[in-house]
Image (cartoon, rainbow, N blue to C red; front, side, top):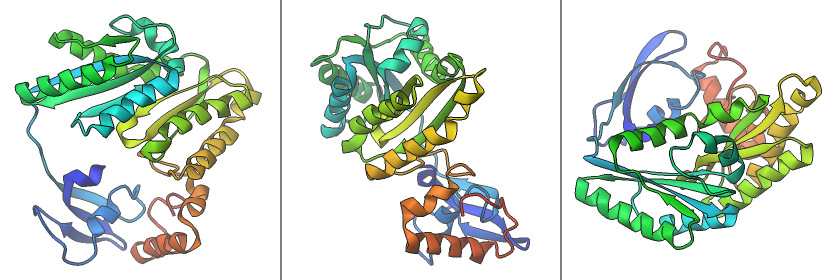
Length: 298
């Protein structure tokens, strides 16, 4: 996703050479796309010292709409309607019923009991944003338990503050957590949400999730008792169960947060033997002495 906005990089590569990849260009297909190979490489291929970025004008208007639905089927159905109609929403998020149970007290409006939340934002010119907002309200209104569509700037700001603070509220519930981000094909999103909750039930720990529904990206949180060493020790098993779920549904072990140490041993399972071999060959070509962020990504 980041790569969409990057047209070029200046990078220091081993043993200390400065190279430029791409630049302030709209189009460039000369050679392999090394720019996007570096983006998201987690510091394992080079040290980025400068970047050329595309900018986009700030929208004239931005209108959020949040609908509450009856469980996962209702919420995912609303998400599918938005995507299926091709509405150009700027954001499409979900917050499952369990997460809403923890966060409802600080929500700036009324929350129906057990509601699965879907948050969409319409932006663009004032006229375009108003049209998209109207369409979202109609799509959500087909079976929503409740709708919240703030118009005053302070109400809109309060809604996004609430959304941005969601992780803090959830994380504070039991003092410990294991959380991972996975992504699945859009048509498997409902399965992924339900089955991620089932992982938590299997291990006997409270579980919830939220994420970027338009990208099929889930942030699943297993809430662990911070003072229970036995429960905290479940974290690796919980994470691995989630990775297995993602791959079984045709997804990825990381939608946006990267690989690092924890997921490194799952790369070969996702990529397969030959692709994993090529992956490691890229690392050796850039960093033959394995100096850059060793033990991660490759």
